Length: 126
Length: 93
Length: 161
Image (cartoon, rainbow over all chains, first blue to last red; front, side, top):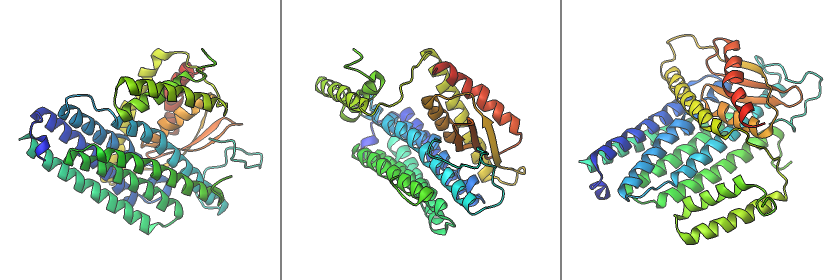
């Protein structure tokens, strides 16, 4: 950690706070993944780590490298954009897949299908 | 001073993220259904990517950033293919 | 202009990505611009649906609202996960009738709803224009429908027409 010796204390404190905040939110999300009972409840847990959990660590990293190299280091923004675009896609697809599988097995406590005319085509839905 | 603060807090963050990875792995092994395992895998690779970023801060090298970007790209495509497979049993329609 | 740059927003974001990855210099600025223009021309062959942004000035407002909401719902869900015994939590599905039909706006709404830990987008039907979401802490169904239509959908309808 010798490279961080010339970092001002305020930057070190702020970066530590952001990184610890992000890491603990990610851990809470992972705990939720194990603790919650049903699949649809667990669908909410990973987005904790992917939104402010990741944002905390990425902001901390931006601050750390920008102050350290005394120029704006912004390439972490790419990961942030990528995560906000991809996490919804994954979770939406998983939610739909789970609903599709549960419906084909006639599981209980499922919502009624949105289309009532009998035909269940899912190719045109987002 | 700032080196000590950072080295300790980054170490704690590494431990927290490592614990998150272990917990996600537990869900991945326990299942019970395929969608649970895929979701746990998704959380697992995101945690691994964040772990690499913190590791990069600890070593002061931006090289880990590239590795994190590659993990994010490949992990997304892997989970997407797996989730698509659950839907129809075929990856390419 | 429009033949050289069929998708200006795409070209600009590709340039920004190139500069973020490689660092800002004159050479990379030229190379990134060439790649942005070329790649957006290649994309034109796929003919993606074109959407017009009507009110640029409302975008920061939407971003701010979403950031605050995501933070608040992060805290709420984290508290419910860590201390499950505080109140009896009931989760459930809610069907939301939508007014929005623009594909890009629907995609943004999907990102907002899924990124917020309290709500998850499960299914959307384009003929009925109805949306099925799963809510983590379902107290009142009407409250969630009201939140989505009045807080996000109306802004999206104004931004993208």
